[in-house]
Length: 315
Image (tube, rainbow, N blue to C red; front, side):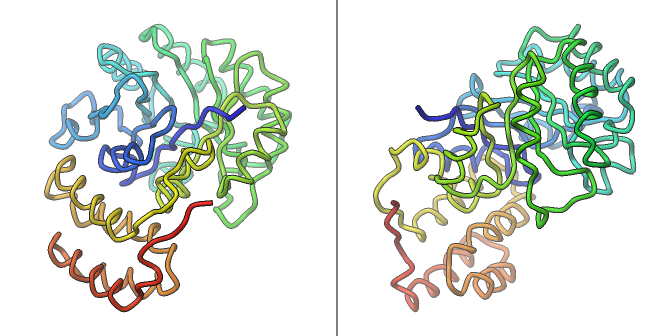
């Protein structure tokens, strides 16, 4: 049995172009949006039509909201409830200082009573599945995490997604996966595990450890957009890297505004190029360019010199 697989919310990455690329390789069970500002959703900002694009399959798409107060997030939820989607997710896990210093993201973990009121307010605004994505907390206090999540459960949360690091820990710190398993046993609602799932072997190990109803992958899905179907044993046997990278550029031009093209391309290549022996050098060259044609020329030159890296066989 294979686990249900979700693609994580990632800034400047979890947009339609990446989803379309993953779909080219067979797709995953659910995709989460980039973190959406509740205030921006309500104000109808210039870029919101792109951020709110749930394609290619809105029925497998989840809107993730962030904000600093209950009223704005509840109002944004009411607006999003009118759109086709698999669910609404509340971001209580982003630990970026620019987010937490405003009181959003992981800062909610320091306000358990207010976080519970937020879930209650949002629950009244949507009939869709309501999930909360979070970290452990400011410290690795498991009992405190359980109390926090039980309050969310009692107020109407349908699903908890746990990234088992504290709000202060960076990606270099190995996740505490036992917290995911133990939290799954402590709650009545399902738990999804997220963090450091970087291979088929690790994915199946985490799934077999139990405690979760699904697994969420993020950065690995950018480096290897075929990872979801590889886990399920149905990935194509051979991947052409140059074709995949050019395909992403085409999708980026089609599904993102022109103003986003360079930043999103560089962000994607920063992860994808770790597939290559000289990936750091290649990223440096790509980041000097600003047009589709010039990106393509850099790729053509690299693979002409490193023909052995043009394609890989997927195990």
